[in-house]
Image (cartoon, rainbow, N blue to C red):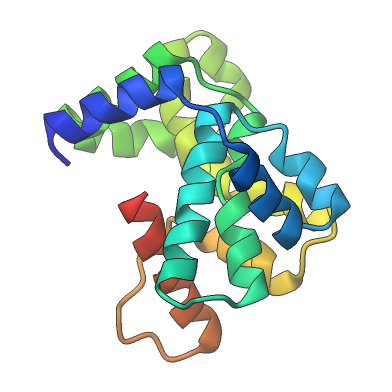
Length: 178
């Protein structure tokens, strides 16, 4: 992704919040406990997740678990919220130091990262899908929705065979466009 796209994301993170229509859409898709979970995300994350869901709807992908997963796929980021400068570091690191960041994000001793704080953003980014799936499960999401959230960063091919894999492909496509 280019510098212009990333610059736009930076300003969006500072300036956006969901509209009343956006929140009405979310309320129409998510049951109460999941709605409460959605509201814990930052406004920028909420807007991104709503864009992901709207992208799916526009492409006629209206499966209820898929739409719920789209709205909650980044909720794991609420476990360890990242500041804007940390998100910038994440993009810079993944762009210019991909081999290092791949090693950093596999760090198993999360508590030890207090000493290597600058590595923690990569661990948070890598683990947020699992954390989000656990949160969604606790909030009563269906097993399919939970699996889609857990797997939303997994590599998947376009010729996926199972229904879950096809839905995951649609989710990833919409996530990348949002």
